[in-house]
Length: 315
Image (tube, rainbow, N blue to C red; front, side, top):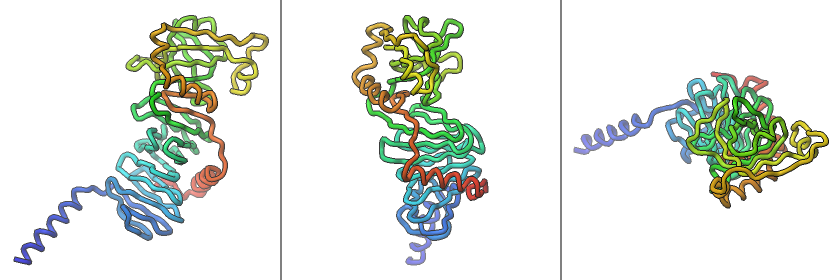
């Protein structure tokens, strides 16, 4: 009877183990934890494992993608994505893999791209594109930013402002439509509103909100209902890295229906205020050029060193 019971229990354990698929392997030169258990050297990674590093970094090989958790970092690992909970994570060959950090989704647009993501808190995410273009999206799929190789941006998701927009750029017109590519995030939006034509070719700041469900034209990622547009002063345009208008004076104009203005709401106004200090607001996420200091500088240095040395080359 005892033998039968032991066999049944062993069968249950094997069944439970088999029900959680292996997604890869983790390697480290020091200790790390997997679901709270301390491991040294290497181990198998199963779907949803929480990996925590201590003094040494750990590398997770997931098929073609390779994830490196820097010291004092933690992330839940899945076959097609990782959820970064703290610290910093470096991803290589991750075109089919995604990093979730706070409410953001970060992915490489190129197969051999290298992306570094660092968490500074629940509303503080920094992304550095070491190689290839990196894209940052909201949980609902809105494109927040596109980072060229060698650039970094800091992101601050703002609660209650999921559609708010504040962008700076040169207003363009094509086929009777208006477009603006934000100078900070490199996000292109189609703009809708009144009196936009007189700002064509000028450096402007636009405040508005995303029109949910609207199909954008001209390669834009979203359609924005403009509630306010103003031409930037020469000083402001120069500071933003935009063309200077010369002697032209800066002016402001409210546009759009009163209903559209109301749709922006108090949350949109708060987001716009935050963007004025940080650079832009894209779909409710504050975006600013990342200042590489302290721990961020160390992380960026490690990223470059790992790439140069081949430590994070494809397995």
